[in-house]
Image 1 (spheres, rainbow, N blue to C red):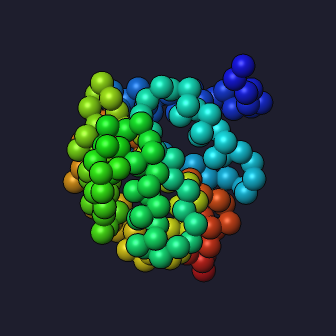
Image 2: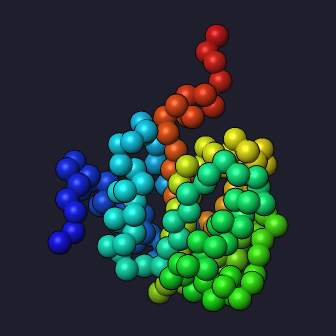
Image 3: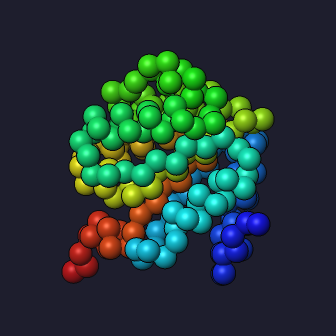
Amino acid sequence: MAATFVGRARDMVDLDTELAATRKGTGRFVSMRGRRQVGKSRLLQEWADRTGIGYVFFTAKQGTRAEELAAFATDLARSDLSVAPEIAAGLRFDSWEAALTVVAGRATPERPAVIILDEFPYLAATDSSIEAELQKVWSRALEHKPVLLVLVGNLIWLAERRPARC
């Protein structure tokens, strides 16, 4: 029996709506923010499992850029995305742009890709170029492919990133 998420039915519907849009061949981006320990990751894991769609769920750990990319490649190799066999065979990445472009390149409307980057603030804290890379790869590849990119973070990080009001 599937777990019940009290008050999360709307979130599930919203995620389903975003995923449905990818089947038209266009990328979608979701930013999920909230207080720590409120179930963001658990919600996304449950939703992704329910979809039956290929996905990778990566949780950052405040490692170096190389460590995080290697961990992402490991999670990709274990995923059910169509790119998994290539990664398992040894394909590695030297940038987030390269990694996400490869995933996007293998996605089709029939087999869209879901990429969940959990604890995104950890990546941003240890890799000053990741936000610029994501912006670049979004406009060049992801928005034109059937990919749903989900960035997950906490409100504390968001508040720290906002410029101070004068």
